[in-house]
Amino acid sequence: MQNSIILANLEASAIITGIIALILGGVIAWFILSAIGKSKTQLAKQQGETIISDAKLQAENITKTAQLESKADAIRRREEFESETAAIRTELRETERHLSKREDNVDRKWESLTVKERNLENREKKLTDKERDLNNKNEQLKNTLAEQRSQLMRIAGISAEEAKEILLQRLEDEVTHEASVLIERVINKAKEESDDRCREIILNAIQRYAANHTCDSTVSTVDIPNDDMKGRVIGREGRNIRAFEKATGVDVIIDDTPGVVVVSAFDPIRREVARLSLEKLIQDGRIHPSRIEEIVHETQKDIDSKIVEIGKNAILETNVNGLNNKLIPYLGRLNYRTSYGQNVLRHSVEVAFLSQTMAEELGLNGDLARRCGLLHDIGKAADHEIEGGHPQIGADIVRKFKEKPEVINAIAGHHGDVPPISPYTTLVAAADAMSASRPGARRETLERYIKRLEELEEIATSFDGAKQAYAIQAGREIRVIVDPETVNDDRAWKIAHDIAKKVEEELTYPGEVKVTLLRELRCVEYAR
Image (cartoon, rainbow, N blue to C red; front, side, top):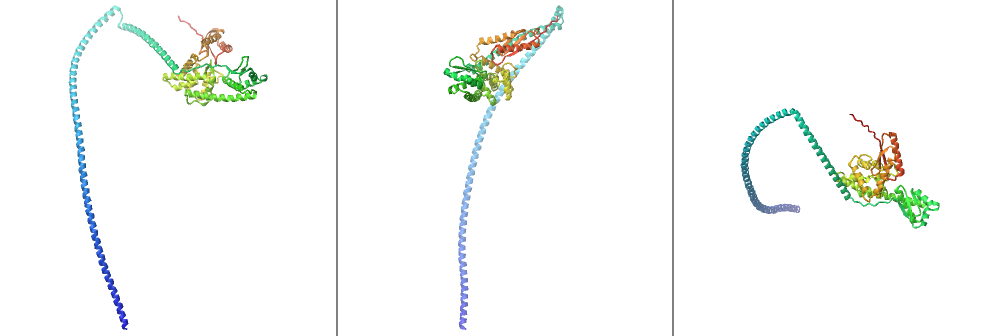
């Protein structure tokens, strides 16, 4: 029992001791925490005071810096203001100086104007006095003229109106005569100047484009190494030569001339194909009908390609742009066409440049003139295949390919077959004549040319009723004047047909000859 009580007391005392220990621990912990908090508060206060002091220092520095900058800015602005003020003052002084000079000039001008005004007043007074004197003299002259007029009327016995008409008629006659003389003088001077200007333009064109020309031969010959080769060309019983003529469409002339075979054809391209083919056959040595056809076919292809290449080169040389590709072969074919020995393609190129030069001298379109000149003889590339003259054939060809009206008219009218609608037609005609008449350009001599024209006129006048005949356009046209009393309209048509037929039979000429027959009846009576 006592032990239990003792245990209980011990337990109670242990509990109390524990509680007391806890309370003491809590009090001690509180004191410790309070001490730590006070130390931290003091530390924070010290840091805050340090920050505040640093901030105050920075604020003072910033304030001082701002004050210095503001003072420097004020000083700078004051200096700028002073410099601007000084410039303005200088400018004002210059302006004042100029104004004073102008004022002096104005004063001097005013003085001079005052003097001039005074002089003018004096002159005006003098003029007034002179005018008064002149009026008095005019009155005296009027009275004198009236007296003389009355005396003349009494002496002559005519009125003033009649005298005025006579005087005006004389004046009109004199003025008309002088006007006629002046007009004739101006016309003659204009003709002389125009002739000189035309000569200058033509000479300038010829000088700027002076191309060399060599007459081309119209006969194609092929050299034969020996007479044995002639026999091989002819073949057994002439089969090779017949096959060759059939394949090429030409005539091969083999005579006793040693070492030469002549190729003859109306078409120059066929003649060239035949010449080249025969040369290839002679070099190859294998001459028989099948080989002939093969060589001719190959040569024809080569010639066609060469024709296109020649046409393109001509276009590049003349710088004619926008030409239809189908016209290129026509230009190439002109290289194988000659007119009295003159190569037609080189002639066309020369006409193109001559036309351009003259057009530019006259202020016209040189490119269009060059195009007209290049195409003016393109009809000669097809006149062997189409009936008619080469101007009309060429005009029809280019019309299909939408060429300009000026180009078409230049081609159709460069020999005067149609009237010109633009100056380019006349320029091309002049350039064509210049190129054809250049010394050495054509093979025909002057004597032969004159003889051909005379023969043409003799044939025309050999028919009954034909009074006169004139060969014009370089022998391309013959105009025949018939007697209207002996030749009626029906017979006139027959005479023109007969003249054309006789010219075809007896003369050799390039292209065609136009026969124009004129029958005119003039009835003149006089009323007496």
